[in-house]
Amino acid sequence: IEKLDYLNRLGVNLLWLCPVYQSPMDDNGYDVSDYYDIAPDFGTMDDVKELLAEAKKRGIRIVMDLVLNHTSDEHPWFVEARQSLDNPYRDYYIWQEGKLDKEGNEIEPTNWASFFTPSCWDKDELTDEYYMHIFSKKMPDLNWSNEAMRQELYHMVKWWLDLGIDGFRVDAIAHIEKDWDFEDSTLESEGQYKQDWKKFSNLPKVHTYLKELNKEILSKYDIFTVGEVGGGAGVEDALKYAAYDSQELDMVFTFDHCWANGAFGGVKGELDLVELKSEFAKWQVGLYGKGWNPLYWLNHDHPRVMSQYGNEENYHEESGKMLATSLLFMWGTPFLYNGEEIGMTNAHYVDFNDYRDVATIEKIQALLEKGHTEEEVRSIVGTTSRDNARTPMQWDATENAGFTTGTPWMKVNENYKTINVASQLEDANSIFNHYRQAIALRRNSEYQDVIVYGKYDLLLEDDKQVYAYTRTLNNQCLLIVSNFFETKVEVSIEKLTAEKIVLSNYKDSDMALDSLVLRPYESIVFEVK
Image (cartoon, rainbow, N blue to C red; front, side, top):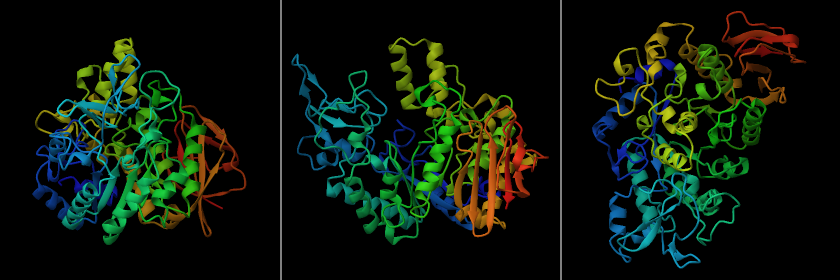
């Protein structure tokens, strides 16, 4: 609550809270044990009410994470469901009997992998059946084909909206429907369990359920909704969820652009800028006029963008500003992850015990068992771990980065003395103040309409070093040009003339578009004709 003025100063007018519900915290709160209560680590329901009131005074709307695919195994529903095969709550979850392999040994119902664990099935010894979990084994998947269960979820959603919440980021919504044939995957890949996400991603019945939720609850409130739809969703999939006439969600998050340096596989290579530009353009063009687009570099499940696509060692300030400009002038609603606005970096943990993320801990164990050296594993998880984005916010240079006077649950990034909010607030040329300028241009300037509503066109699409695009509305046109690397480069942009520099991360930027020289990580917004 005390940081709302900071968000106001930055220009933020919507705050998305990751889960704050009651939870055993197996997966940072995404394992909900009580949807109607707040985890004591985060505060109380009175704190939530105060946050809503104080945010409203400042014109900031509050959006909560809404976890509908699964609950915690400690949720009362699952505790009841385990008691017997005919328990009324049994069908709130997905159960299957095991099967026999060729040798007559009992194995899981299918060979499907989970996102977190080798198998998406875990045996419950009480009833001798397997329950499905596409994430942690402590997060059993809900059975959305059960109408009574759906109605309980809808009642909970309504309860939060009546409390004053302004909307939801709907977690893992692409996965609420499963392939009920439960046949083994024939995907050709190594290992016993197959990462065949199409078995439980973006299946047609998802839209039936979302339309029902929208009709019964969401459409009755003036709120905002964004859904998380991984699992390989493309533009056409996204439009099923969030076209202007879909009557499901307002927009969706996909993650095509988050791993254009190969780091998803654990080995960070050089950024493939042509691929990154292609992914951005696919969504910028594919959704324009049909639905709305979210803009983001990362979230709580990804490495820090400064470490992904920036240069934290030699060009921290320049690359941080470049990443801001490249993102904030595209078409859509920008989402900034906490610390992005000051250029926070990956955690760079050396000790495996410093990691808290359940998926990372599982991955460390699996890699070591496969024979990788500790140094190799350290490099892989240091590049990909979700904990990279989850280290405490770096407010100042005091102990624990000003995040807490106690002992933080996660170790603070060691660079907090040089990268923190307090120092950047005082520096007019900081990354923070560059974000602030860019946001102000979006929200309150002569360019706000062209930035918010203008058409996007990609230029220099095959250039391996420079990202250039225009935004056009009526007789206004902006040109955004960014060098994504630490070497100087010269490009030629024909048929356009620079009238004015609107924003730059260097003080004396070039205006000759026919032979434009860009310094390391230089990024310029031009008004052009």
